[in-house]
Image (cartoon, rainbow, N blue to C red):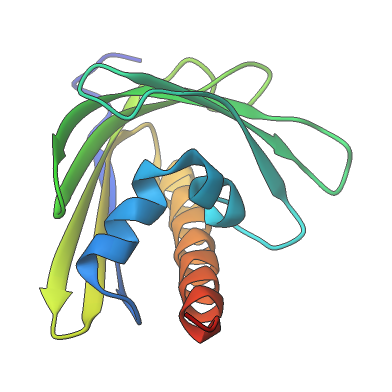
Length: 156
């Protein structure tokens, strides 16, 4: 599939009950990322590699309920604290979308003491891929909301 053929994209928005710095840190800190960067609570994620810097790479392994272990990797392209993160996203084989590089832009928009997270996932190979990623990001942002609510309830 050529680059020109990969024109599909999705945009997901979610208001998170946490300030911009807290949400940015959830993307920046591998310990926090491993608590929420999964589409569903019954899928765990292990951080295999994580260099949160421009051109820094990441690699994550998911443990699925069926016993499979899909792996995703990528590299950070742009990081502008505390409002913008851009990175590549590539599944490894045997995933159906393996070796198809895509691009994710995360915008964190301050809304009083909340943060609107806007995720734009570009260069997707098909409408089916859009549906898959849309469900995945919706689930991940739900997990992020759950994590920030739990962390906000902890006594200081």
